[in-house]
Amino acid sequence: MGEQEQRLAELRAELGRRCMYVSSRANIRYLTGFTGSAGHLLVTPDSATLFTDGRYRSQARRQTSGLEVVISDGDPQIALARGIAQQGLRRVEFEPYSLPYAVYHYLRAELADCHLDPARPLVEDLRMVKSPGEIEAIKASVTLNSQVFDEVLERSSPDWSEARLAAELEFGMRRLGAEGAAFPTIVASGSHGALPHAEPRSQPVQRGALTVVDQGAILAGYCSDMTRMVAWGEPDATQLALFGGVLEAQAAAVDAVRPGVECRSVHRRARQVLSKFTVAGVRLDNAFRHSTGHGLGLEIHEQPRVAARQETLLREGMAITVEPGAYLDGCAGARVEDVVVVTRQGCEVLTTTSRDLRVLEA
Ligand code: ZN
Ligand code: ZN
Image (cartoon, rainbow, N blue to C red):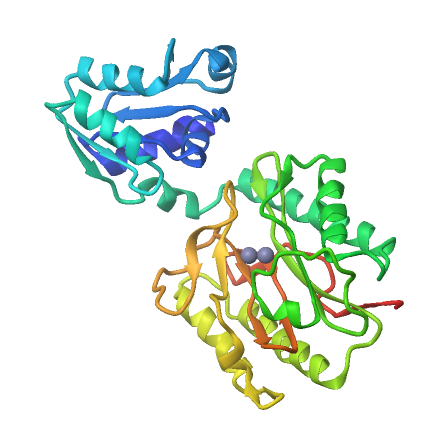
């Protein structure tokens, strides 16, 4: 049995006698191997059917095994509704976060005898713990991402705009074989870096200021995610103190990652370390405005979330980011982010790029 068939079997074991309609593209890929953009997967106790359209006729058959592929001449949702009706299913669970309202509405209208109920995130739960093959894929993506960072910074210039640097990074990912960036690359210099999700601007990076570089690639379907701090010319003492606090918090949070630990205690550890630092009159835990990390894999943000109220226990094989930050309005921001995999004893940091501030010639 192939890896995908095994996953389908695991989902079936969770479902028991229930039926599930899977609409999330990442979940369909995870369960079947199918990478097309249009697909609906129907899983019942004794069958699995992928409904797609003519563009994917040969691709769907090539990429999948152990399931039925139905090619629709029109919109695949028509074939899906027909399939549910033909099998006489009375109750089907759907994925509330990925099912467009229009498709839901269509199915409701077409299937008067079938109840549609929201499903629990069963596939997302399965996806939390990565197989050895998936960990290798994430590692390859992380390695490529780090190579691009080194290669681009090496030849970068402080005359480049934030947008140019972001574009060079994303082009570098494609050039090294990635499908693309996992998310819009963040390059944010000086006070702009105080926005955790800043959009790169067309003006040059600020000399002598902390610059946040947050980038991730998709390689063979799997995401990477890394944040490093760069400066063209030495930043002032305030900015160095901000970076120092974040760096210490990040290292402590990584050290807290091990099986059996609640996600929220990794977050708490980062906050605890940040609270020891006061920079420009601000205690750094009060300048930390987001969660400490997130799972990643086929998607850039997956379960588990490493955040304040998350009681999920870390398990061997989970791949998560650890990325505390601190943001001083009008001054600067700092964040350091690695990808780590939970191991039997603790965790393995997949990101090999040095966490130190990279000071380049101004
Ligand atoms: Zn990131
Ligand atoms: Zn991230």
